[in-house]
Image (cartoon, rainbow, N blue to C red; front, side, top):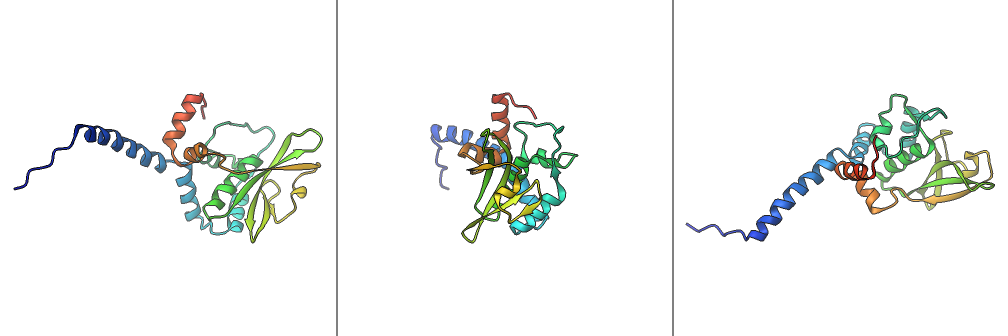
Length: 188
């Protein structure tokens, strides 16, 4: 009978570190915003930008001026609000993430007031057939010019979402998100 090959001590240490890390990675993904959005997209059969837009604008309303702004709130928490209200940037983010699951290029558009340089509105654009199509959560309209989404002279500022590899990780791993929020002192 062959004798078992002894495992070097360094290899055993590596295994003792990697196995828990892999468990945390799997657990973090299981409870992540990314997995939650995948489940939502599957359950609601969100298979086109128009269906995504119809679902989000049909189930959620624009937030009221009196609604709180909660920094660091997860996408899951935003979508679970009893009020079913989102701010314009939150609606654009949800639309963006759901459309990215359809392998669509998306970008958020902050509309800066030409006089003050302050953004008062954020909307989404999705690249379709080489063109960027506007999807505005607040007005519940799509295929309109950016200028039609605000009542002021605006300068568009385009940005990707998520904006960095760390941000991507936080959307895909709830354990990493909890660690970063604790480190930064964010409670939600």
